[in-house]
Image (cartoon, helix red, strand yellow):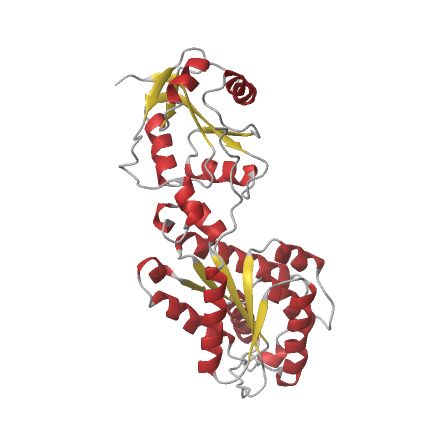
Length: 361
């Protein structure tokens, strides 16, 4: 099998899937140096930088570059070819010995790269029966063909949040279990626990190591605690989204931490926590109402009198920031049914991928 010094893989990777990665790995194994050129039209939904980052993560041993290419495809028009090649050559100006593709235009593309060899890899998609069109049309059906960073970006993130002792953890756990019970790809549905809970337990344990009789009312927070909590919560959320199903349930998030900062810091806000929250990828927030939910002191709670204020504050800030949310009231069974209905409605909307530039006929 012939080996090459400088190889090239070119594609839109919109979004990248197992077939794309098979092509890149095949080319990598036959080249001393391989460049992957990611081309994206400006009308597409997934930013070029994000697609480049995905490919670099999955293929750290190859060179990945990106280029914006807004020229419609017409493999029969030499002028259109010339326009595309100007984009390609600006991104990859060096020598190319072989062009690896799974497309019928591979021979012409290779010829235009200075007479490089054209290597066709699995043109019938028998190794991985998937395409970018199929992924955009049905991400759930193609979920197992996606790599972790793509799953993390596409997973629908559902956040359960609320004041103390309002059933947030109970609901989050039950909601994730509901989707896992559907089986198949849904069996991997994750539930991200509340990082702040463990953080609080460790604070109390550390205080008791110094003062054995200390209780939760003796624990104090400072403003620097909350950015740490928000960052760790976001990190755990992202890690779970990479390995989970098309929906991820989160027991609180960085946005909720902005309200907890106000609760413990005498109403003051934190710009740092707000900035972390702004980077979040949440799609739906489920607010657990405090009404008709008995307050249970589990040793880490002391805010029964603050629950009405917190519920109202959560609702006000969710609305102010334009987040999609639903307030859940009544018994647990009714809350769970309403939550499932809201999540199913979110999933039924699908994923809004803009169409790529059309081919010129």
